[in-house]
Amino acid sequence: MIAHIKGIVAEKFAGAVIVDVGGVGYEVQVPIGDFDDVLLDTDVKFYTYHHVREQSDELFGFSSLAAKKLFELLITVQGVGPKAALAILSLGQSEQVRSAIANSDAAYISKASGVGKKTADRVVVDLSDKVGLPTSYGAATMIQTEMNTNDEALEALMALGYTLADGLKALENVEKTLPTNERVREALKQ
Image 1 (cartoon, rainbow, N blue to C red):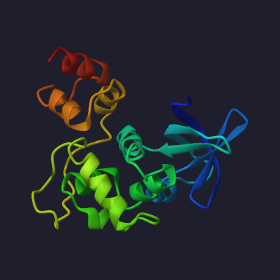
Image 2 (image 1 turned 90 degrees about the vertical axis):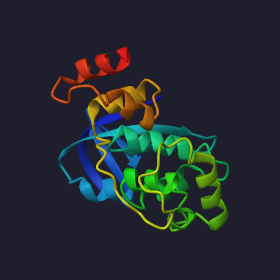
Image 3 (image 1 turned 30 degrees about the vertical axis):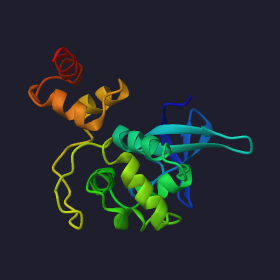
């Protein structure tokens, strides 16, 4: 399995980025936000999900580990494949999508291309308890939290199997100025 891709952006087209890694170009499907953020001929790193089927072999990439983990949760829902999960993550930042799921905001999820009301309802029902606490208690209100899901220590904990909520709780009392490896070590002790 390919865990991440790090290289130079060689091309961009139709929601995909070709990352040149030592002379080999990897086509990576990315959410719209990541697609808009990357520039040609710049260094980039994507956390990837390698999707293998009988007819195809695809890479889906995300600029943060939190977005990749949310993608992996989304594809566990019946009726949500990698393309639909990518469309859901393209609605906004991964934290906004996570918040919508936690708030049971199926209307927000159903705005994704190819995702109907029934599928959006299923996503909310199946995942609302797995994505952490809601950022507000009103289902109609979308509030982006101040949570930093680009924290390397948090991403390391999530790679070890922690959920977003558990990782945040473990890092709550750990000094933020410590190096990443020490923060992870302290969080694991708790």
